[in-house]
Length: 319
Ligand SMILES: NC(=O)c1ccc[n+]([C@@H]2O[C@H](COP(=O)([O-])OP(=O)(O)OC[C@H]3O[C@@H](n4cnc5c(N)ncnc54)[C@H](OP(=O)(O)O)[C@@H]3O)[C@@H](O)[C@H]2O)c1
Image (tube, rainbow, N blue to C red):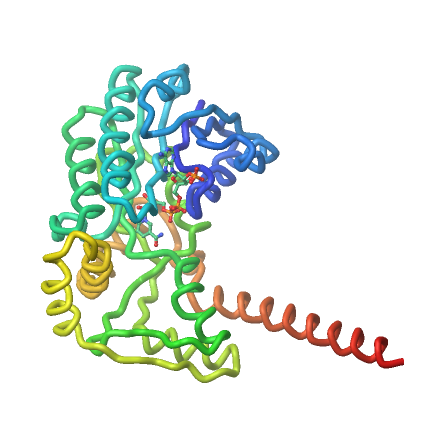
């Protein structure tokens, strides 16, 4: 079975490629830069050049494909680029999937995408979800609140570097997920018929508040965080003000995102449904405290070795 993966070089995409290869799939990846994606080839994947903004580069890679996992998205600050990749690019991919009679289309989306049409990325995600559902292609859509990996930049690094962290006063509890587990869920869904034509909320079973994550990082790093509190109300006001100006659209989007992840009350029960349909034991899913413990141990060891090396170097130069 040949699996076509879009976004295989990305944070989640590379874990999907690895898991798919481990599970014996033939994996073909559409990549923009073959040299940068060479690690995927070394793992055993086939690389085909393709760019979602260049439709003519896409059809060739669909030959002989049984299923598609689309983990691509743009992080571009430019709205036109976002629409080109996350909307027009996807239109072509869905048309090609229809034409080549793909047996399963796995699309990765964001939690609550349907509720925020004024955020461009959310609107694009929701539109693509609708398009796939109406396409007649057998599909599975996974929706995430966020990945553990993103929390490193958000909390761990600022704490280690003694930089300020902005959190909202009305802190929600959010179930993040490790990308290795998210990848496992995707690959497993391919062999479970009941996941066909389903939209599945995905996270680890324990949800965390921002304060709890900060407390955990402080404990593991031995450093005190410089936390700054802001209310969601103030963020909304700021969004309304900044939303008037084109140049600040991205600021507006970012603020709205904070509101999105602050609206995840029913998420936990949906996650239980995902575990049951995929027959996954929640105890086997990595929890955030374990992930952070490993991260800080590794970082603190590296820093200790660097400092020891520096002292040795200074002593030698003094002799
Ligand atoms: N990160 C999160 O916390 C989060 C939360 C909720 C949902 N999600 C969703 O999960 C999925 C994976 O997210 P991620 O964080 O792993 O993404 P990511 O690290 O930003 O990776 C994006 C991938 O898309 C590829 N890509 C970008 N523009 C392209 C183009 N024009 N043509 C072809 N490929 C292109 C990139 O390739 P290059 O290497 O060439 O740039 C990269 O492989 C996405 O659908 C995202 O919306 C993520």
